[in-house]
Image (cartoon, rainbow, N blue to C red):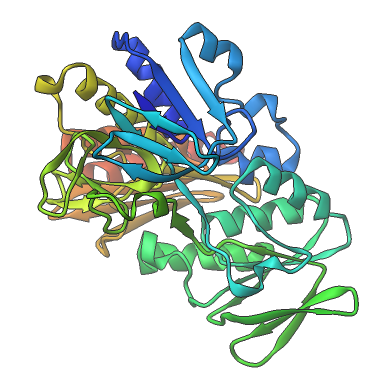
Length: 407
């Protein structure tokens, strides 16, 4: 077994294989030289200094030795020879396999000016360390992209005493993910926390007298000591381009993680997990790519079972669950959150948005309301109605109001 990629999807696959009783050799390759680590904390606790590199480590040489996994770090895959069942690496090394798991992930999308001194993207531990050094109290930072990563960067900057400006070409940056109403709520909330430039893009960044000049699409210019970029990712699939594996917004897979060819047939003994993969989702009737930590872990377990017991491979139903720590608040979302049929219940600094399709609860977003998040997840899983959850949210709000002094 060869696993290409040692982020959470690759590491959890290796661990799950051993837990399922896989007795063959396992070689895990990764282009980074650092021991495997968790990625979500990069824009959260690691960036703020609340966590150390040891806190976010996923897997080290000791555990690799215990599980009899050959961990090869600093080794970049550059091509796949399916005929010879071999992964070819930049160093010239060739790794033969009987089974292959593609977990090569993604890298930050970089605009043309991203190579300038003082401009950073965030995708690695080294990126987080470099950015943290730039967050000097009293300095200024322009953050390009107001998705979850951009908002977390703005939050970390504000906490460090840095003057941040959050920029996004969309007037409501999160509307594509959360719908127009909830996206507008979060946009207003972000405006209350940091300076924002929503509805304008960045056309250029250039050096200017020891700082950086940021040119906006409406012609205005901003100056910043640092520019941080969070505008999405590009998939690490170049090494697969000359192979029969079908690439269409990711490695296309069936519902058990088996990679497909251009005719939709499984490629024998080849699987894909994590950000690089696009699995068939039975509940959606379509292939979906889910960039969530929880989903990567679940996929690894499904693939491990499919490798050990090919005849018993189970269909995976993707977990659409993600969280984000911003400005001292915790945002959690689960399920399908793009439906426009949404009811919002607000209780001071906490609120919930409940999304419905035909009356059934299909998605939930909460801010500082973890109890309601868990109740809603159970309701989604059981096929319950949105009305029941609205009643529960209102009851919890009334109970909290009664418990307050003078309530």
